[in-house]
Length: 386
Length: 134
Image (tube, rainbow over all chains, first blue to last red):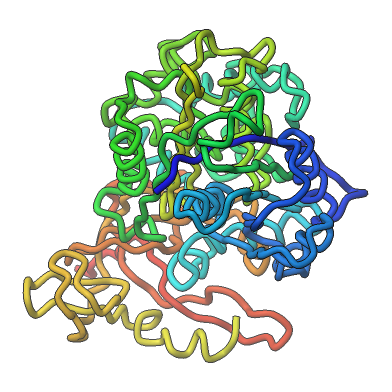
């Protein structure tokens, strides 16, 4: 096993890109990352994507993106793990470099979601759930999360409005992120009035449907310093899994897959939650942010919402989350989000996060969740040479 | 959804047939052939009695493609009397009357009409139990 480092990152603006197809989105992010890393070629390319077949009528993204990016001939393959596809692709890239099978590897996460109607996209996103026993009953993916949020409120005595600080924090941070989809703040009052999608989940609990792509370039850590002015070490890369369906879980309010993934990552990096300076978590819905905080060891069971209510999640708080807007406000182009998270942790560790800079950020964690908790990939990144 | 994909689920959709583990006795729905508790093979069919209670619920206002005609509708996690949970729509009930812990029973209803071939898919939904007649 070799130590692995990130030597370049790139991203496109998240938004509704009517003029841009999935291949151009991927190209934009990949070119930006290759420029940042100042490497002309890569040994292999991993494309994280969930729904290109359903939403763009295009599978076979590995070779497509390689060819389109001027990398024809390069080994390339698509990796899919629902909304966790981006980090799952990074995990595969990490394995390739750590195992010594490749030196320079590109990982791009891409999703193009705005080509179809809302109902079609909603049905496609439900493919993340159990097709035979969840989606087949008319559950949207939002509904799956709403079942979690309702039970959470019931068991721990929270009101819907108690989840507001997650949206307020995410939108505040996105305002300063040029790559984010939303550049406007929201208030707790606005959250309370927000339109219902699947009771109790409202529009402001939910990440938006959008387009985007993000990319990172990996290299062996021992040569990263020669290739990059600010290499970032991948201190841990770990995956945990759980059942696709909520009804099959040991306890639906505990994300066992996320807990396993985080524990494996902490063990690899030799750190504890207290050592983590910022945590880019999977806030596809505010309930997921709360459950992620608990699963990763930043809050006791039932106390994830309390962390937000106690004002601990801001960039200067105890557990900074969604520091560049998170899935909620940077946007959640599903198969790309896991790579966006890692790009943002790199920005924080390089000290280039601008107005959202977390003070003295040395160790950052990103956790990307596929489905309602079935495939969970955690990466811990660390500044090198310190 | 293709006819075959629905047809092979008929025992589950119409009669709530799951499995029982002959090793540890746990009841399993949906069937998965390997016991989630003790990991032994578990292929003995077991028909659930169709009664349970609401563990959680939500009302869907923005339905996925194929379910728009029913919106808004209420979906739930139902904890069956025999132990396992399943996911289903609630029916014959006002969304405002649904509560966690509410007893429910299975009924067979139309789930949706499928695609261009118009196949009508039936399956389980859950409702408040009908009152026993005096």
